[in-house]
Structures are given as C-alpha cells and as structure tokens.
Image 1 (cartoon, one colour):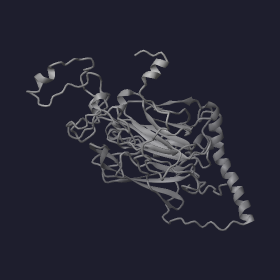
Image 2 (cartoon, helix red, strand yellow):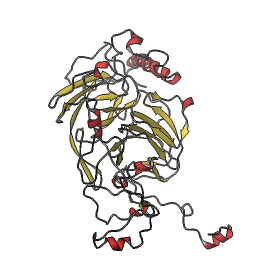
Image 3 (cartoon, one colour):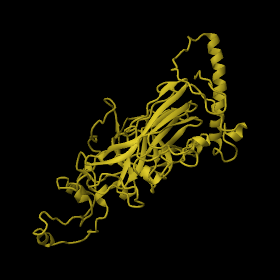
Length: 476
C-alpha cells in the first residue's frame, strides 16, 4: 500500500527548489502506519476519483475532467502532486527496443529533466545513415517515463540552427505549458533554454514533439514517447511493457538528410527509428503477460500493426485505459497518426513471430520506390544486348521484388539499404521497414536476443512427399 500524500496543494506552478531530496522515511510504528494509511486513503481518493470516471465514462465527455479548472473552480487544473514515483517500487519500467530513456533527478520532490534539441547522426539500418534532428543525441528522442501524480520540470536547450518548442502531446496540463510556438509561448531561439513545469494528472501513453515548423522538425526526427504509469496498477499486472514509436521518412538513395518536403511517398518506415533488419526483437518468456504501446507521429500515414500467432486486446488509446467491458480482441491494431494504442496479451506460444505494419509498401525499404513495373516482362535477349553498353546489366523484377532479397552482393547506391529485408534462419526475410519480431521462449538467458527459434519436430512446414500427396488425393 502506498504511503504517499500530496506535497503541494497550491494551484499553479510550484516554486523553484534546489536542494536534493533524500529519503527521510522513519521506521514504521503502529501510529505512523495508521497515520499514513489515512493519508493513503485521502490520496487514493484523489486519484481514484479520476480513474473511476475514466472507467465508467469517456473522460471529459459528460462532465469536467477531475481536477480540471472547471471541476475545482481554480484558474488552472489542480497542481497538487505526490512524491516522485520510482522504478521498481511504483512501476515496472518500459522496454524501448533500439531506444533510450530520458534521465531525471529529484529536486525538492520534483522530477527534473534536461532535453537538448540538436543534430544527430543516426543509423536506420546497416547501410543507411542520415543527419537528423533529435534530442540528447538520440533519434527519436529518449522516452520519458513518469508516474501519475508526479510533478515534472523540463529544461529544453536549443542547439539547433532554428527555433523550436516542445509540445507534450496528449498530456493534460495548463495552456501555457502546451508548447505551440506563437500560441502558448515564444519559440525557443538557438542557444536559449526554456522551462516547462506541470503536474502529471493522468496515466497512459503520450508523446512529445516539436510544435514549431512541424513539417520540417518532425520530419527530421524531433519526436518521442511520454509514458505515464498509474500510481496504482490498473488491470492485470504485466511482465513486459514495450514502447514503440512509428514514423516515416523520405531519404533518397545517396543522400544524407531526410527530405521534410515529401508529402506522400515515404521510403523509410521505422519502429523506434529503425528499419528492418535494424530493429531489435521483443523478447519475452512463455506465459508472461505482455503490453506493447504504439505511438504514431508519421507525417501522413496510419499504420495497421499486425502481430502473428496471437490474439490481443486493445487496452488503451491516447485518451486513457479502455474499460475492460469495452476492450475488444484483434490481431491487427490500427494506429492513426497523432495517436497511441496499447495492446496486451499472454505470450502463451513459443516461437519467432512477425510483427509489422500491414500496408505492404510500409515493409519495403528505399529501393521499392520509383521502380518500373516489370512483373510479367520476358526480357529474352535484352540483357545480352544491353551489357555491351552497361556491363553487368540484369533485368530484374519480372516476378516481383522477392527475388531481389538475395542480391545483397550486388553494388547498391551509396548510403542506401536494399528494398527488402534481412537474413533469416532458413532464407532471406523479404520484409523491410516497419517490421520486427516477437521472440517467445520457454527459458531466457538474460534480456538479449536469444537467437532463432527451432520448431519442435513435426511442427514446421516442409516439402510435401509424393506418398503423402498420393494418400490424400492431391494431383500436382
């Protein structure tokens, strides 16, 4: 049971403090236990009020949201907060494949973060690097992880050649902290450092991104995830909690910068800013309960993410947790741009399971674009006639793109990745872009990639035998 109580009952931003907070919790006595139990009930009532609303109705639809200015009669939403929630004690940290988390320190009971907007040299997959914009040396920016009721303070230093802001996407906060350049604040000029501060009043999956010259700055990578754990767990406790940001880019072969002017034809599709085969697998043990959070800040496209081998429930949107009675089963979850979706399931079947966007052009890499349709073409003697002019010429694509997966030995344009995939245990995996793997194992040795799965005998597809065909009356 939590022993936390609100530490600031004054509406509006708290005063600056600079002293580090240390744990001064005394040993529990019967009296202190009873006193804290009382505080816990009061605090729990504060948090549970909002949660009860979320479970019984759509937040904000029928009445003011709990703690909002209209609800309390204050000038802004209630800003009372709780002592900083800590990993291991108050929540199980999320896993960010290929990603990083933003560090924080406790200053006077406030979680203090420092974000630095800057250019970043980023590798999307072996063979493709680009100069992007991000935060703290990462593309995307590091994942922010906090707890409902935390007071957070973000210092944002701009080391870009252009002005910028940070918008806390989906987060309930005072208007002046919303980060829209020109509307809520003056944009942060190069060299300046701004401060944002607010109390986190909700739980769920949010995001953050630049809200100044969005088309350019988001297209160059200035986005990130903002995970808020409930002060008390909601729903079944999960064993693995993954966070994945979806995004799309235009990077022409041979170039070194994403093109922010592209409006429709994106040729690098990523999970946590990595394209397959650069994506890290999601590794879990058989029987564990798994949560996967998806955020989508692609410029133009929604992404239907399909998980093989499992049915799951969609448990959260960016508006909060869905009441259990309203959750529905799926094998594909559509993640609209500008939104988050969360799924949960029990990993009850071992194996290597594909997880990918089901828009087929979103599992291609650069070279799948602007290629003429050669399907069905019979070049006959064309290759021999062209080779005197172009040594090594070979007509490709007559049977589609899959036959190009094994041509990694061929020279490719500088700084580009082949149109499809990577090596699998049996052959080339003819997928790229927004593709990764869920690896479920009976036993794990650490948290790293356990390697390829070996199906038990009799549980893997194989060539049909003649006697089998004869027995079953199959004529081929």
